[in-house]
Length: 193
Image (cartoon, rainbow, N blue to C red; front, top):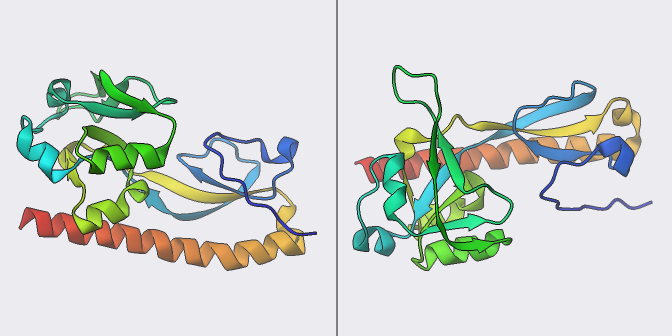
């Protein structure tokens, strides 16, 4: 029996829905799963260089109120940032979207086209940041990076196809996420210098 791969932007119940493995971004709450950490992703605020040249500076999260915002339909109209020094309360910024889409590809294209500021996971815009089509803003205000795991229901690692998948996928995904992080660090260093 051949495997299937589904890309879903929702959390699935692996056992109830008949999945052998999943890739999860975020802290894991379910301890009944076997998890292999493969890396981490950041939430980054980005905009095209030409958009940034034609609009007010973005030095702190509150500045987003002066900007055109591109967001995803399933996300709230507020973005959360870490607390200011000396506080324990996260900062929440209400945004008024110029464009709301249900397509990551559409949101990335809109941001690279200079239509506004957007919030993405770092891997979603890694290529555009690497090539300079997008610039990360508010880097000093990013929330803590989120862990990424491949998870498998307890006992499924004894199934040969699941074990083969894990043996194949986990090292490659770890390498991929390490490369994404290195590229991001290198790009950030180049921008700062």
